[in-house]
Length: 260
Image (cartoon, rainbow, N blue to C red; front, side):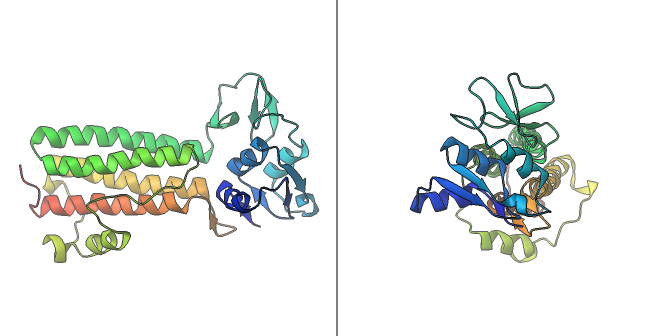
């Protein structure tokens, strides 16, 4: 089975503005890819019905042929996924995925957005505490990560590519190197969670743990284990590196590199 994303379609459409798209047996369109096709009134030639193992999501949605003139839903309503049902009013247990596409609030992408929102809230609290205690440089470093979390939210909601974080000019390789060898760069061995490091350490370590949980939520939302594919590898990779960045901040703090 092949997962076809909006990014795939945009790349193909840039070179060839096709008027129809063939969905082969076993292929699956992501909701964003489906919206991309319908916004451009591209006809979907659904050959996936030839496959006995096609997904229910694709079958239900494409069977309606999306007789929609503008966008991915009726002019005065919404489109519920995965059923493909058109509704005039948004059900309370549904929410917006993108535009007029609705999904259940238990949808993995919506769960991901909720955890990202929660992490941002905890960053705000921690940054204010760090500023209050006088660690200005640490507060600036944490704020850089917080601003990047907002970039992640925008990139996911708008389905845009996510650039790598600009943090002190460090590359992806630099972040891995510094987080793997803190004794070499910050003078401290790998830090195991402990209350002996104090309350501020505990708050920053909470950010590290929550960032790792958010990465798991991203994998659940965007990766398909059975097809060994990931729609948003840029987001999952970014979150992996962000947890490493928070760990580096912890190592610098314990090593005395942040001054009041």
